[in-house]
Image (tube, rainbow, N blue to C red; front, side):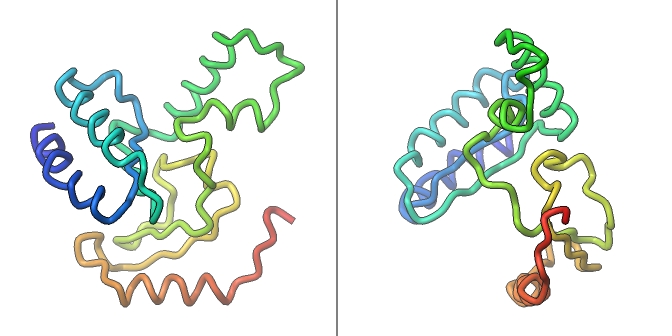
Length: 156
């Protein structure tokens, strides 16, 4: 936790300079108050970023996200016959964030691993044997080239 706090404090200035907005998703209320303040400070400091968005998933699980969305539905008093995909999506951790078009899996894994379960429903997947720390620009280019060749069908 101390490493995350240190990294957030150290990298916030770069994000501001690069005009990148930081978003953090997960069960942040379970983190220490000090870490919550560091995260909130970084999110606020980068809120005017217009050149990109970096979303950090911390203390995050896709199933937990869906459970929390359902709890919000119940808490909001949404009648069962009014629950649809839009009402659930609006209560996920980052409701304004677009669903990913491409999910890249490193380390040879061929599963989503409880990551953005709702959001990756129509994402294209690309897997590589390369481990995350070694993932390079060339690896990203290969993933994007593969993605560019695909015909997106969105469940059809």
